[in-house]
Image (cartoon, rainbow, N blue to C red; front, side, top):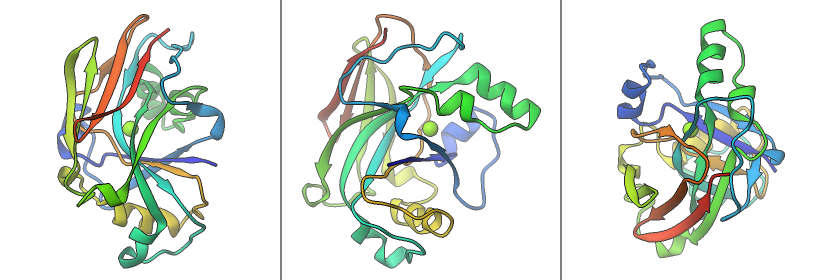
Length: 203
Ligand code: MG
């Protein structure tokens, strides 16, 4: 499996990082080795001094697809969850500055935290979902899927024109505003529509 991660999908977060607004979705990938399974600790890598959380709605692909039309994209997933796209912000800044790929900042071991999933059938509208992150009990990040620049179905359609989607692939749909650094012993709890989908410590 692979992770497909969308960048710049919430206007307020684009402003937060002083990026430009894209005409099409922007995506990058993480390998399978990036996974941190549900509620396992996240280990801060020794090569970064500034690792940020990015809480994101995640979508699990349920069958093979390529060149998927937007109107059929809803058939390619039946579970929605919450994850964290951990980012070595200091390395990412250097990559952007030097025009280099982002992998060392984004695709490192453990950088894709995957929480629990909820059946889509239990969610009336995937573009009407509220989610938030507690850092040591304090709400630090909150988002709503209606604020996405590109909807989940648009993302699936767009990505599948370049990369074949396979069963088990996970799409990180982009972070809302409110990203920030983590340190050892932090506790992160993520909620989607009030249901806790992950709860883990930073080591
Ligand atoms: Mg992200």
